[in-house]
Length: 409
Image (cartoon, rainbow, N blue to C red; front, top):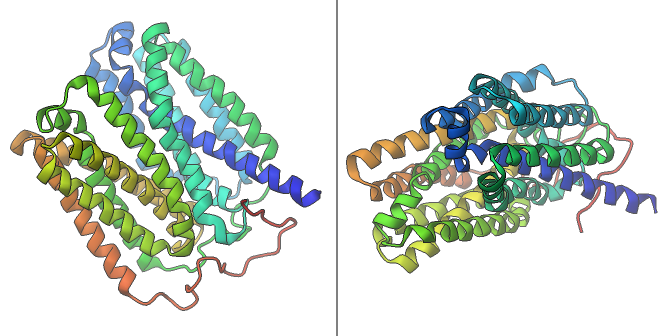
């Protein structure tokens, strides 16, 4: 009975953590869908509203590692509960602010909690279950972010268009209260770096920094293409603008399926999963460059590209728990910063290619960046692993814990 109860608590805590990734992803992206109503209400141009997203990403990129180092001794339940409470407060301020300056300050506060949350959520979630299930656990956590893009942001945009943009952020803050309660109640009170997920199972500095480079390149390639996908669909594929929402929904659904399917593969062979997902994304983007003028082919390849990139994030999450050269939370923070570098750089490079060579070139540059990442990952996959890395389920020795991690069904 006690073991069954512990298992249910672990599953509930995992769902709560996935709810956190849903909230943070939705909150980060909401101004994109609410660009016009926010600009009208605050009497600022749309480009200034867009800075709410740009500054948010910059804060996450810069703050992830130093903030994680600063709170390295704080127990995870206390830390994550505090972060979610901060999320609720900062989004409540967003709802009631009357000036753009105050709104920007609230967004910076949310971004700071975002930076810390994403750094510690992966090792904290992995700690709930036995080591051999880390890939599946990471996939569930990251699926929350994908569901936010598929359902959360469109729903928030729909609500904001009908009830005002503040209603969307109020709904996000309300959901934050619920997620806070679940995490504060169900997450075990453990100290950082005390269990099997606190440090890399097979620490390897070279492989970790290679993973960081692959994360920047592959993310940059994905974003260089995805940022201008609406323009590609209408100008190259010849599809009507009204079809864009449906195409993005199909891509989003494929992303959720891809990240969940990747979990078991990451548990068995994380480096192979990394290679396969980067390769899948490259092939899809190259196919869009070559055959994107065929509407049906374009829709299928856009969905495949989304599936590949989502599964790639699961592989990243599983590998950081394996090769982290020290504390896994600091390694995850570094990887989170790298992903945000890729997002920022990819959008910038894609914009340059759009202006100089047209929208089809954004697919080609995305494929080329991914190809470099693939070459690095494939080369690393062919190198014999360090001694003791033969099984992803074999953890490094750790201190004994008061309770056993649960198993997923």
